Image (tube, rainbow, N blue to C red; front, side, top):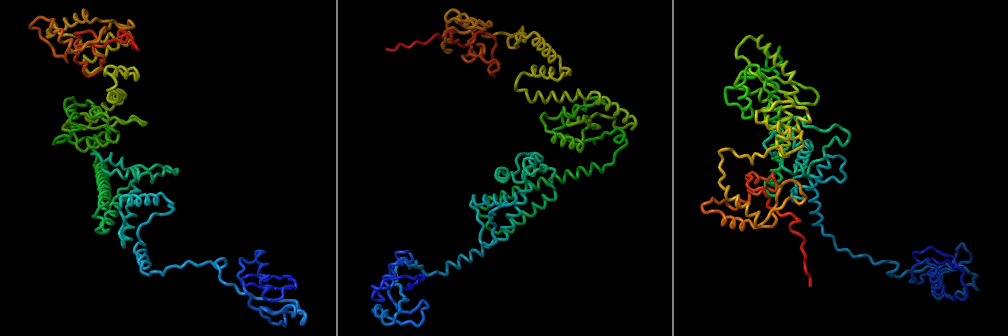
Length: 572
């Protein structure tokens, strides 16, 4: 029995034949057996030492060398158990060659560590943003990188403060830029980058909260944000003065300036409200529920100049609708601001203002009327109460006038005004009178045309000639009509609809003008070729050039399809 113990492998008990006469042969045979069984990876094992024992306890053994005769050991000492040790020589199979690494240079390591310390406090993109504010900050940092803006070393805390304050301000204003511009007026205020790149992050309605409105912005918070951003921009250092950081700085300052302008607007609004609330009411204002406007000694605002002239021309206690004298198409917010300005500036006459609330979501009706400069307060109160009763009764009439004006403004480009007036009357039941007798006559004629379902009743005024109107080119166009009938020919509408005439053959306008000029008597006034073209019946009666048509030639300068006939090609 042999216990073989190669280097790096567990021992194995093996039975071997007595034919193995030496320890060296026993060692090589054991190594071969272990290698074939997959216990060891290679055969690079050599004999080191061995002992013979009389039992499995392996005690009191006899040492032997590689050439010891094992047969003699068994015969003389009756020792049949052997324990051998081997040594493993170096090989690539069991001991892989380790990669030789170059000596480490301490200077790059120290430089990298120094850079990490200098950039430790610089603002960095959050790997997993949890809030919309962090997402907006990531977008702002990404925008800086896209523009080539990199923070210099050792500007960590100041740069982080700048990004944080700037992000908070942009987040607070998200979704309100256009509304602020409408409030301020006078065009664009905010750079486009805030609407295109940094919008859609502060949307409480996406998380089942109330939508953010312009009234949610606090003037104090806006001022605080403006001051904070200006301070951090001032503390950044000279790198903001060089491109591309200079462009970012100008964009941030443009945002701050626009917000500061809106803060001034809010402050003026607050002062105006406080002044109006602190102003004591007179007896007339308290009892008649009206507002006495101050007399404007200076020039009246251009917006109210027409209203001022109308008020001055009317009698006392005759109500005038303010909205009818404002420019059409004004939004409700702009109308409100205009009324507030009217209350502050006033008109040149002694007038009062009254707001009639219709109810619901409809806009209020605003009226002004003249009163006596000096008089009995009770008489003025009674006069104002009578006017208010009249307004109460005629409120639908005033409202319909305003609606009609807005309707005409919005759809005036679609059709003629007479058609729009008829459409509005038929749809809304409007019974308002015409502005003048001409408009009344035109509306009446149009109603007759609608009832008869005959648009031909409506007369084209271009065909009507005044008694004293002279036709300079009558002879020329009469000869033109004869020439077309004799030489060219005319044809009726191909489907026999109407009395419209068309050319039977195509003609060249310059050639037609020359031929007719040869036929007329000497001394006849000849029109230009272009004017001759305008006297053919226009193809589109709504074209701008149709206004030059004087009904001289009742022929359209076009050839119908059936007059041309089929085109035959002979292929040989």
